[in-house]
Image (tube, rainbow, N blue to C red):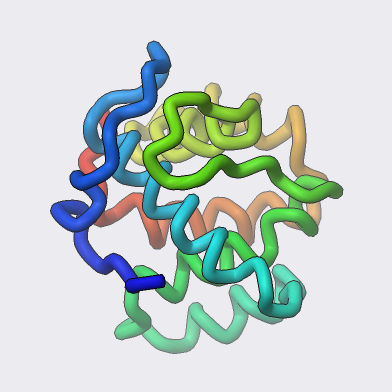
Length: 143
């Protein structure tokens, strides 16, 4: 599977027909779906140790953040996340939750981000999940 690096590459996939999606949110979601597919065969990673390794290198590619997020997401959620194939019209609850969290973090909506995190992520994993998601969303203009 080819590795996609830019949001322009992600534009080849049609937009999901969901009211919570816009062009940049769709690009983010498809990016996470692609990385999730690439990570399926790899071993899961401990969330705390992965974030500690990333935080020491400021030149780490954005794809590394996405890869670590997708490899650790099941640990943060306490179960395997449901992700559809890139370009799929249907959006799972997990995908919609990730996009809403990314938008809240990117827009500085602390109340919504706190609510979303508190609803699904244990206290010990929240900070690391936010760190990873913010490392990814910097490349997307989520309004």
